[in-house]
Length: 197
Length: 162
Image (cartoon, rainbow over all chains, first blue to last red):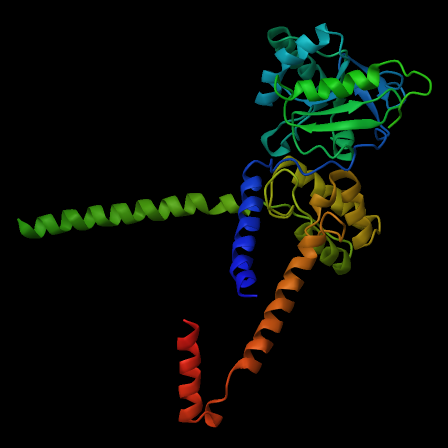
C-alpha cells in the first residue's frame, strides 16, 4: 500500500508529461473535417473564363480530382501554384475553387468578373497554371458548405463525387506523398472482387 | 525675465494639451464600426446572441464568432442570422454548422468515445477528492479524548516505525 502511494503521483506526473509533450507536436489547425466520406455539396457556380457556363456538382463526377481552394490575395496559395503545376504535368486533375474575399462596400469596392479574370491570368502566367478550370464562388456558398476556414485548402474527391481527404494549408513536398498515395489508390481501375473501403 | 519664461511655458503646455485633446477627438469615431442588425423579434435577437457566443470561429484559436472578424466568422454570423430568420431553433442551427465545420465549431463537445475523458475526468477527480476528505476526517483523532498516555503511545509507535 505504501509503495503504491509512492507510485501514484509518479504515474500521474508521467501521464501528464506524455500528454503535454505529445501536444507540442499536434497541429492546432487540424480539427478534423465533417466533410470527409460525404458527397461534394450541391452547387452551381460560374466558370472563371466563361462565366455564362455554370459548373455543377454533377459535371465533376467520373474522375478523381483535387479541388483546390485559392485566391490571388493569398500568399501561401501563390507559393503553392508552382508545386501544383508540377503535379498537373504528372497528370493529376486539379480544379480551382476561387475564394472571393468580401468586397468592402464602405471603400467603394465591388466584385467584377472581368477584373478577376485579368488578375488570375496575370498570376497564373507568372507562377504556373495548375488548373483545368476555375470555379468562382463569389458569395462563398460552396466554400461555406465545404467547411473551408481559409485558403489554401484542398479536397481529394473520388469518381463518385465523395470527398476522401480535406487538407487545411498548402500541398507541399512533405505532405504530398501521403495524399498522392490516396489519389493513386482512388484513380487505379477497380478490379472486381478487390478490397473495398 | 522669469515671468516671461512662465508665460511661454504655459503657452506650450496649453498647446500640448490642446494637441492631445484634438488627437482624442480624431481617434474617437474609429470604434463605432459594428454590424447593425435589425431583428424581427426580441426572441430572434436573443437566439442570435446566444448562438454567436456559443459557436466557435474555426479559423481562429479560441474566439467565438461574435468576437472575430475573420472572413469565415463574418460569413457564419450572416448564415446564423439567415437561419434564425428562417425560424430554425438553436439545436438546428448548431447542427447546420456542425455538418460543415465539425464538432470543433461548438463550444460544448459531444459525449463520445473520443471525448469520454473530457467529461469523465473532472467528475472522477471531484469524487476522488470527496472520498479522500471523508477518509481524512474519519481518521483524525479527536483532541478531547486523547490523554497524555495515549499521546505517548502514538509517539512511540511513530518512532518505532522509523
